[in-house]
Length: 276
Ligand SMILES: C[S@@+](CC[C@H](N)C(=O)[O-])C[C@H]1O[C@@H](n2cnc3c(N)ncnc32)[C@H](O)[C@@H]1O
Image (tube, rainbow, N blue to C red):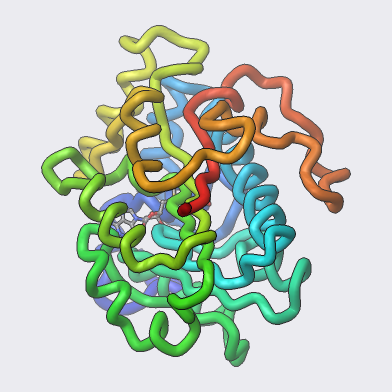
């Protein structure tokens, strides 16, 4: 198989990756046949997966606009993925030209493509790092250059914590990041869950097996377990809810994003918390 220019040398393009599978679901072009096969296998168990992903992206855009409306214009987006339509820096900078965004991902394709998309924009950058090592993220040169921790920051952990197993101690990782944030900072989070899925857990569990087989386990958590990521934050209204139910009216600019009717879009949880 030939390696396209956007795939950095050294990556194994015979193994599916979480970020390229997600790119496929969102209709992107940075994926290989192995990724599409894995995505299709997962969709045999959960045909509505792309609807969940779209609801996730739409939630993320509404939450970013909300952050800017609250006066928070610095964004640390961990597990940011392969840039596609309506990325955090585009939404944030459209709402506030001074918005600064640092993306973080451990996937080489996500990092390389982010670099290409961000180009010469000196208010954005990308760090190749792992959420399981939050201190390395906080100590990175890019974060040091663009994020002022004396002022509020919007920390995005969108569709990423479900790729951390309990053995990775995801709660400790979130706590380490939280402790670096100034009061008034926001935590913007979504997470997969069996709650809200219009299927039995048994059927939906086939999806978990697909991710386990590509050695990127997908960890479904309950609403209660997901709520615990907000320790030290106060959940904004309407709380931790299914993604389309989080402030569906948005703050303007939402006309193109109608509330989805597909029941799959209501799987999983999204919420925004503010650090006291
Ligand atoms: C489902 S995508 C979500 C992308 C984006 N946040 C969104 O919601 O549209 C998950 C991303 O998290 C990244 N990821 C998974 N585990 C990670 C980790 N431990 N550290 C950093 N990134 C991670 C994957 O590479 C992938 O790009």
